Amino acid sequence: MKKYISTVLFSLINYCVFAQYQQLVIPDTLSGTQFNLVLKDTFKQLKSGNQTITGGINNHSFWGPTLIMKKGDLVQINVINKLNDSTTLHWHGMHLPAVMDGGPHQVIPMGGTWKPYWKVTNQASTLWYHPHLHMMTMEHLSKGLGGLIIIRDSIESLLELPRTYGIDDIPLVLTSRRYSTTNQFIVQNVAYGDYMLTNGTPNAETDLPKQFVRLRILNAEIERGYNLGFSDNRTFYIIANDGGLLNAPVAVTRLKLMVGERVEILVNLTNDAVGTALDLKSYNSGQPFGYPGGEPNTTGAFGSLLNNTDFNVLHINVVKSTANPITSLPQKLENNVYFKSADAKVNRSVAITNGNPGGKPFDFDNVSFQLNTINKTVMLDDIEKWTVTNNNIFGHTFHIHDVEFKIVARNGVESAVGDFESGWKDVMYVPRNESVTFVTKFSDYADELHPFMYHCHFSNHEDGGMMGQFVVKGNRADVNRKSYISAKPTLFPNPVKDKLNIQFGNSDVKVYYITILDLAGRTKLMLPQPNLQHGLDVSQLQPGVYTVQITDELTKYIHLVKFIKQ
Ligand code: C2O
Ligand code: CU
Image (cartoon, rainbow, N blue to C red; front, side):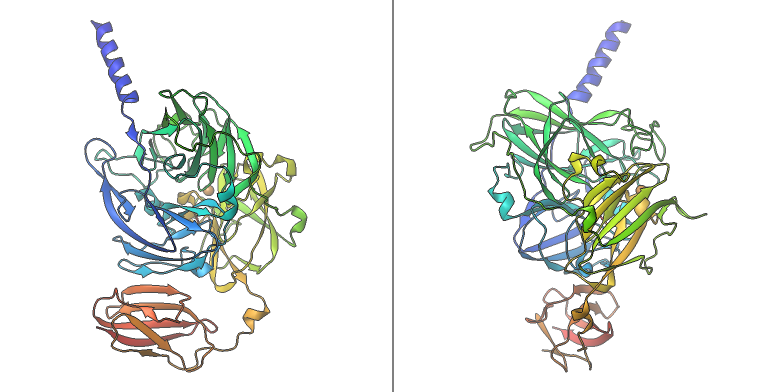
């Protein structure tokens, strides 16, 4: 009898473990040059029982649409904040003006619309967007707010690579959550979730065709690193790092992907029989001390059911191939010319330090992040070499905005840089008691007022002050601009229905920022460096009286003018 019960129990457990796969969610795509993103509080059925309160974008109840952009396009985004909270939206990995970057200074209040725009200059790559409000990033990211960005360009398009989104080119956003007894996400003091979510899908499975398949993988965790591989230990091929294609594929059987990092891999399914299955897994057991997610505990702030174990990321069912399958591995990809150590004319070092006494656990150079402190000033067009040293007890990541960089050394040794990280990067892993050196160039966008961030991408560390900011200082041409808004601008027509024009006393002024507030002082529209040629579109505003704050580019003086919206 006892044996019978345990057999039944065992098969029940088996049933639960093996038969509860859910179809992997593939986020919708938006493409073109105009994107509308509505951030909202919502809910989703993630576990049996209660639904979970989540954050989503547009029609998504967790995460958001994948934005497909083309290199060379001028893209314009309407970020509409319908959350019951302020937030920001940052374009991780994108090279753009600081004022469009969506860092902690670009706060979008509840009910506000932020309208950044920029010319896409990044090469074909997988980037992402996510909230970045200081001390709230972990909470907003944990809700599920974020999305992928796929950039296409003429080089990548000509390669024989899988690129049919959702069919042979699959986005995979990896994260995990801990749930309360009522199925709500626990965010406070939780570095690691207990249950895997792949594109917001618990126990995800998907069909993949019997051919070469491309996986675009983002580690969107709070803190956990992934050590990815397949259940049969097959070789797979890295074709891209954070910033785009490598020069040639790199063959591996395991791949570490730390928080914020992206990788594109090709998996050869041509030799798999239709009807067979395999698993993409994270082999996190037996990692060295200091590896995020290797801790032994199963509970508590730094414990998790997934810690120090090997667990499933995606169950893959092999199905028949598509009409025009990719059946071979390209030998050559890009022609990246990388920076070398010797290219740098400025050397900097950043130390990962234990938080100052009584402060937060970690910081940089013994200084905790302050919104009003600029930690570094970089000169436009300078090539710089940064060495990040971690004398801490734990591994961390390091991410910098504005640029993609080339890792040139680990612990001072050039040959210690892994092939798997040989491409353009914007996040790197810095294990305990090690240093990493990268070289990058700060081109195109100078702005002495608005900073870019660098930080640990563990959002609990970042929120806790492990972040700094730098401004890029312009050259003479910029400094020489002499014309500023000399008198109060006028608005016409006033009252206005949809297009509001702004007239200045002098002609060659530049506007740095426009904010439109209602009579209660609530920010309704935020327009960084607006293009005023065709007037401002105010059609979405409710009828009423509004104040326009116009910030002059040169002096940063703010002019206030009122108008009536009909
Ligand atoms: Cu992914 Cu400062 O950000
Ligand atoms: Cu950290």
